[in-house]
Image (cartoon, one colour):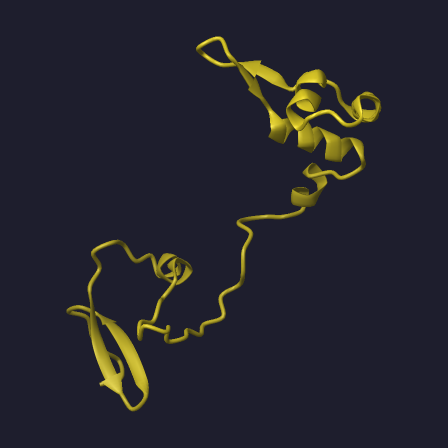
Length: 122
């Protein structure tokens, strides 16, 4: 499998060939169990980007934990009238599938109290 300046030179040399032929000619091919060939497009494009100076390794090196949005602690009523409490919140509270809650309604508010638990608001 070509990489770096060799990969860029080969891509320029081949010019207007099909993407499959380009990947095959640069050596990004592996064998299937049945003996057929598998073209590794993802590995080829990753190597091409890295050869052109785009590095994926450095982008994630300083990151710790999971990527994603931070919790906003707000929710919207959806078009169908439902309201969703996301997985991040249930994980934060260590809730498990099957945990039950009593729904307590107040003036323009909804409280979820663990079933059989004590409601501090009462």
